[in-house]
Image (cartoon, rainbow, N blue to C red; front, top):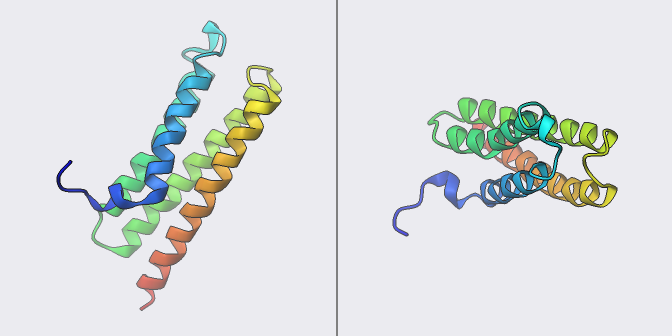
Length: 124
């Protein structure tokens, strides 16, 4: 595969990529009238997670890295909120929601660990 960029080595970035694929699979089952509404919004928020992790890790200053990691976390929470709304609208089953919530929890914990690690380096 050749050279790997820093972000490609991050477990959380790879988890977020898998999460995006899962989001696309689930939103494919939403009603057609949501294609340009909730589906699009959820997909864009989910895509923002690995994208901001990648962009953040490409920054040379720890302060900038933290900013993008925080944006990635915010996008993850935005995705979670929209999935909750999808559950309320009965576009998503309780089982699917519970499974996705576990993925969100895992990614959230890893983003927070990355955040703490970079903050520690910033303060050194």
